[in-house]
Image (cartoon, rainbow, N blue to C red):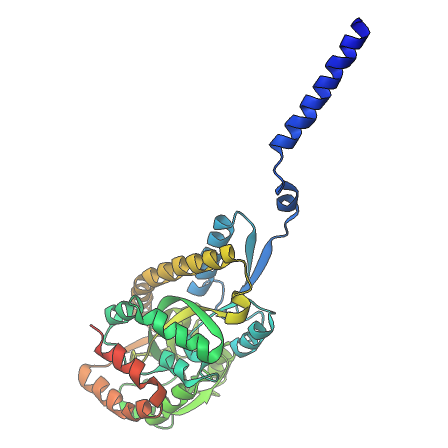
Length: 338
């Protein structure tokens, strides 16, 4: 009798353990345990000290945290995956997921993107930020995606673009015949032609050497880009023209983006906006720090243009706007925005 009781108890214990195991293990556990993380490739042309690198690191951290590690981001700085034009082609084929760049670099796809390099359309930093924090942002980004295929997320205020040159530039006449490097953008070429210069489209990684060897006379970029790439060492005359106030965005290929799981799409947008806001907040502070540092360097000459001189520059580029009729409705909204 005792033998049969012991056998019965053992059977009951075995059934209890088996039943308890089934209740505690969710059906999705094996799949979750073996789920392979999604890896996004993000690149930019800035060196390690550039604000684009900081924005990339913030983006990567937020994506990893908010997805619980289900998605991670690999960062490729300093044009390590090639120049932006090559990267943008790679995004179309799925080789790269995202690039931090100015919408103006997409002008070869459609002239609507020329807005990124349009001269003298913002009154100030405050004006710029207000425009891109308004519904105008989504309206414009939607049109860019329809016309180019690229999805833009986040607006990183880069500050005004300034001219760094081998010889000093203090007035409009000093630009005549000046060989100035510009991005590979039609509107930038047209802008500097209108100013009397001889623009030279060139990939940015080539700029330092070109100035050093005097292949070009000048280049233009926001202060952080100039400083982080040490351009002032080979072109020590800094003309604060603020001819363009620009931004960086996280660029994605729209069709690829829609193939990501919905949870990942949501997190990407959140992470990009957080990184962009951080970038914008840092820019003004960093610009002042750079100017203060340069003002103490006897090798660097900082040139400030007065309102009368800047008015001459604005008048010189007025013909550029007429070359882009597709942009007129957007330019009107920006210029008249309050």
